[in-house]
Length: 309
Image 1 (tube, rainbow, N blue to C red):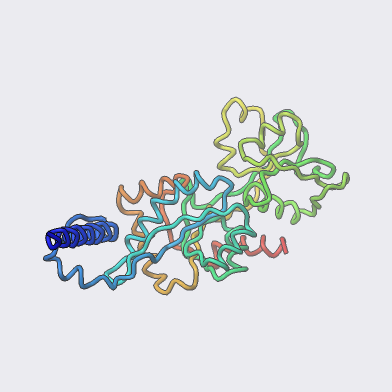
Image 2: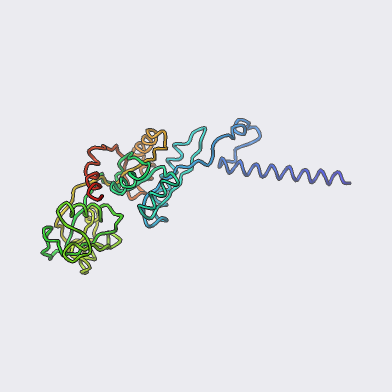
């Protein structure tokens, strides 16, 4: 009577092992098509699972930006995967420039998206290089504008003693670009009364409202954000000065990525199909990637970086 009991226990054990193996196989392949006859697949379990491609940018809202960038990370990971390595797309959103530098140094960010000034500042401190231009919101380049209330008599030649509303210290068009333009014009931006006093609205949508509410005399914002100002507010402000143009956004890649030409091709080919264009569109209405001219496109950027040092 003991033998049948033992056999039953052995049978249950065999079934349990089979079930566990089946579950693990399904988890690896996301398929329920593996059978005992799939010897070729079962013998090729030396594939490197778990390798990642990390895509990142700097932004305060990590939840929102992760949702935007995840489809791109998944797509790039899938295209880079081959019979030897299966990649998983990871998105890492970092709050500040300093934190991004540390993250890249410590965790090897693979692909980094940002505006040219912030991006180049990060690249100079890390092992990242410019790869492509990203046409954010359908624009290859942009510039900053200085705005005042429509009835204001303030001109760009009369800014000493005035308060300028910037977006935040991490913003290219809302701070770094207009700041450099002011410095090149001979102005000093600090908290002393005889110079220009900076204040920060923390959102480009707040900037025109702040100058209309008297929280500042002049506002600095991008020409693209200015065009998007609601008409009932836009008709109450005017532009008194504009800066030179810089690329809208750039794509940077870590030097530890060996086949950068393949990655570049993958991104450039995303311009060609409705499915991939939809993925790009999730990232602040990005419309395409394009080649970068390191001399021409970054000439103004490098001058700005020099003035900020």
